[in-house]
Image (cartoon, rainbow, N blue to C red):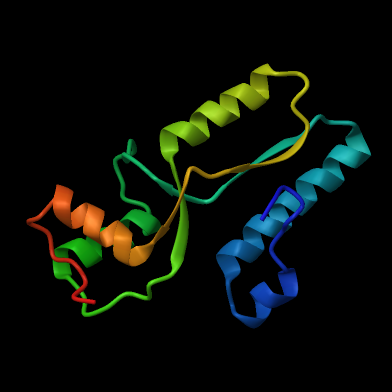
Length: 134
């Protein structure tokens, strides 16, 4: 995976992955607008963002994790997750803004971890939550 990779729009439609499709289409529109107007666009493309929630409401990603930790579940698919801390995403956005030489797209990722390993790290740090049994 590198900065030339984009989600396949047709695959997103077929699998009904509307979130990824909307992000891909929005970025595409931004690049088209930049071409038409000469606007300088830099795209920061973070992977799964984890971090403290600063807003008063809980977003969908956090709700899903909270539900698993409060209610528990029997199993989770042991997929490889590409994660980044929210603070690192903010730092990359500031750098892209402040550096005139920043151009194009930037992948923002810090760690690649299997879900099983992530659960074990969470379990050792926060042992009182409900974790997937497998």
